[in-house]
Structures are given as structure tokens and as C-alpha cells.
Length: 247
Image (tube, rainbow, N blue to C red; front, top):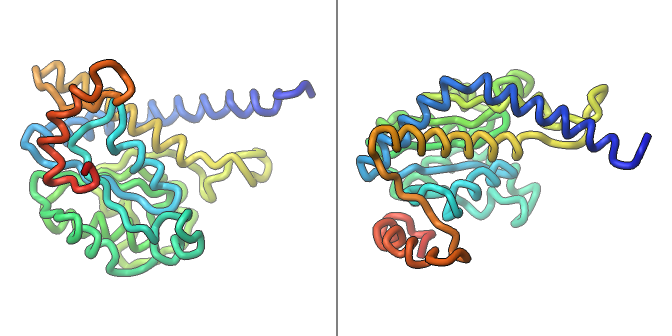
């Protein structure tokens, strides 16, 4: 086959899969956007969380050109594979870490919203994050794959992230994450792409719905674009007291 033909074929399949994600989550995206708008309008914070490679979704949500300024990332160094791959897996399975992380971040619940990125959503960290936030009166949006959860072992009596969340944006990623070759997938993991794609769709939906209601949401501008630093100054002043990672 010609050079690049396998990649092109897989790209076409990936685009088809992303189309399926859009169709499947249409109604849920609107509901999730409404939750974010209500949260930010009440001067609450959108807490985002993940572990392992799902931290890519958290990074996409925080201090990013075109992103919401009201986002407070939840982060523990041991959850990042760059600080120790095996350690990150063990840490995500550690019971009690979610409550510790929420406490350290000053998560009080109420008007705040929690967004959790997790491919299968079966490990204690994402499940306990959702359960704890719900117990404190907050809405929880999960970006996860129900199919991946169904094909994975249970690691907590609390069930899965999708079962604990208020609202699920389903990435439709297959069990095991990999997608190529179709006959026996060993590479081309899909969860990071699906997480970022769904998050950006959510930002678009939030923008449009807020605009229709005459609500101006706080968006970050690129610091490398003309006027970017000046535009971001008021956001930094308003949020840095509550979002310590902005300092």
C-alpha cells in the first residue's frame, strides 16, 4: 500500500468515531453547558480532575487560550506518569486520596462543579471524587467511557464514575483504549483525543448558550497575542486568590 495509506485510513475511522461522539452526546452537552454557566454566573469554580493520561484533559481545561478562567485543576504529583509510571497507577487506586485532594483544594461544594476525566472510571480516585462532591451538594460531570467501564474490573464498592456522576459525556472509547488494528487493537489510544474533543465541544456549547442569554463568560486570551496579557489581567486578579495554581 502507498506510504501513509494506513494512517489515512485510521484517520478516517477516527473522524467517524468523533462524529459518533457528537451525535451521542448532543443533549448531554447542552445540559453540561447549562451547569457550567450557572456555576460561573454564581462566581463558583469549575474543578477539573483526572489521573494518568486523563490529566491531558485537565491540562486542556486550565489556563488555556480560549478556556474558561474559572477552572481550578485538581492535581497530585504522584498521579502524573512523568513522576513515576507505576506510582501513578498505584496512586489512582489509593482509597482516600480523593477526599484529601478536594480538601487541599478548598472544595466546599455548593455552587462549584466538578468535572472528572477518566477513561474507564473504575479506580477509587475518580469514583471517590464524584461521590464526595455529590455528597457536598455539587454537580459532577464525567468524561468517561461506559463501554470501557463495562469491560474493566470493579475496584470500589461505590461502583464507577459514570454511576456516581450527575451527568456523563460518553467518549465511546472501547475497552483497553487502543483502536488499531481493528482485528486486534494494540496501539492508537483514543481517550485523550476524545476527552479534548468533548471538552472543546462543551466550551462551544457554553459560549453559545451564554451568549444567547446575554451572559459574558470569563475566557482566557493567548498571552502571545496582541493585548492578551492586558485582557487576562482582570481574570488573574479575580481568580488567583482561589485558584492558587494561577500564581
